Amino acid sequence: MEVQTITRWPLVVAVWAAGLGVAAQYGKISVIFDRMAELYPDVGAGISFSVSFVGIVGIVLGLVAGLFVSSIGYRRSLVWALWLGAAMSALQALHLPYGLFLFSRLIEGLSHLGVVVAGPTLMAAISTPHHRGFVMSLWSTFFSVSFSLLIWFGLPLVARFGLVSLFVAHALVMAGLALWLSRAMRDVPVPPRQPFPALMALPRLHLPVYRSAWQVAPAAGWLFYTCCFVAILTVIPPYIPPEQRAAVLMAMPLASIATSMTLGVYLMRLMTAVKVAQLGFLLAAGGVIWLGSAPGDPLACLALSAALGLVQGGSFAAVPQLNESDEDRAQSNGAMAQAGNLGNSIGTPLMVLALSLAGVPGLIAVLLVLLLGGFLVHQILAWRRSAAVGAI
Image (tube, rainbow, N blue to C red):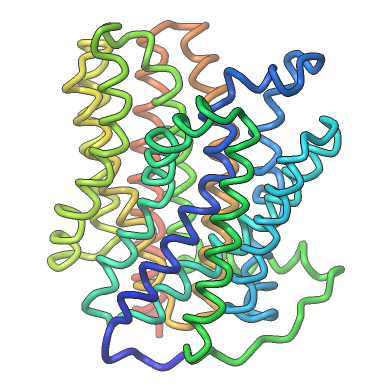
């Protein structure tokens, strides 16, 4: 795709809005999870699968999604993924039997992947190099912003019209985004479509990406980040004073967003996105030590979230910085999707296990290992890139 001489801000916002829509595929269940038994009273503990099934597709197909998106086309993938997501939410509004509901969640995973791979690739392509750090930091906020919007607007909707009203609203939003983007993106230049990958070759297609110190770097750090962030929001609340708990939990994602969009964007003018992510890992490790000395301290929680905001923005901005072609960026974004789903899946059980075996000191130790691991894996891959460039 040609280098842009002007950033197309309305289209950037439209693609970011598509990210908000697919983030709500997780959030629409999370915010009503304590009431899902009203819809499916006979499921019992199996109701937890209603959240996790969206992530299964990302774990299995996250990387190869980049190959399929570059074959199908970025605009087409984005719009089709939104229509697919709209259709699944509309079906869920019919109060499907639980087995079919889980199947619809599995299909939503395909919709989710299509947007999280094509979306940031397109946003990087329609922005100038000067604005790209800000644009990718904006993309990195899509989960936090979506969850906040669901709390502010989704929960009052549910309180007034019932649980399935949230599925209806989500279907309408996704369909509206599909219509908006199908029109808005008609004149966007697109790169040549790549040959469709052979299904039998998919397993070995992982190797070139995971061997590349450029393509895999954002995903490698992202795995450590996602192991921590959602898990922290899950296991820390009982330690926060009850009278401050709700306010702190709402402020923690906002602290990440604020840091990513302000300090993170400024620092990316002075250093690479990878360095910003590494700085975030180190500052977050300091926040964890503070939290260990004062479990549940509101300021420590906010400081930790603010530091993780640098990792959040730096990780997504590293994709276009490290990868020149749209195909490489799509594969790197696919690897990030795979790493993110894996991290979200293993992070909370890992933290709960650490707490059960060793209490708060065990939790702090695991968090420190993960955060310092994120810093170290970036450093190792940076050394590999330097060695490869020096050998040319």
